[in-house]
Image 1 (cartoon, one colour):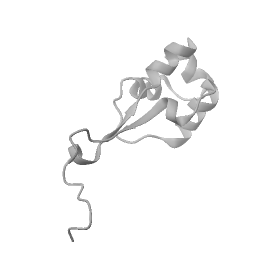
Image 2 (cartoon, rainbow, N blue to C red; image 1 turned 60 degrees about the vertical axis):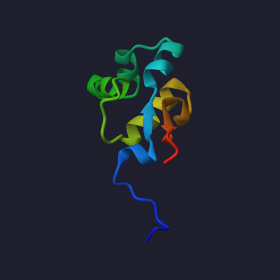
Image 3 (cartoon, rainbow, N blue to C red; image 1 turned 90 degrees about the vertical axis):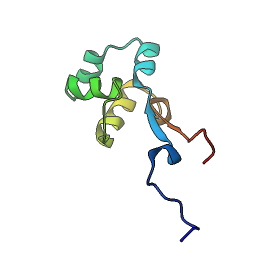
Image 4 (tube, rainbow, N blue to C red; image 1 turned 45 degrees about the vertical axis):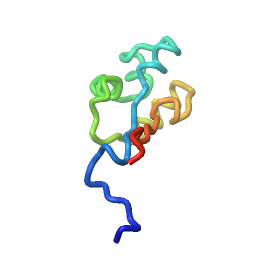
Length: 85
């Protein structure tokens, strides 16, 4: 069993960081405008910008990337565990 990694602790496997605010600033697009163009409600965009999401709707992310003409890696980054555990 020791050949498998355990996910008991969130510290060990890292996390995904949402960087939508940075993209919006670079593209000079407001959250309200993005919500309109991506055909979603403002709350969804605000949650993404505030990094206040547990689950990400991939359809909304696809629309966001389409509207902003960016790649998913511009919006979400994987941050590996830095302690080396």
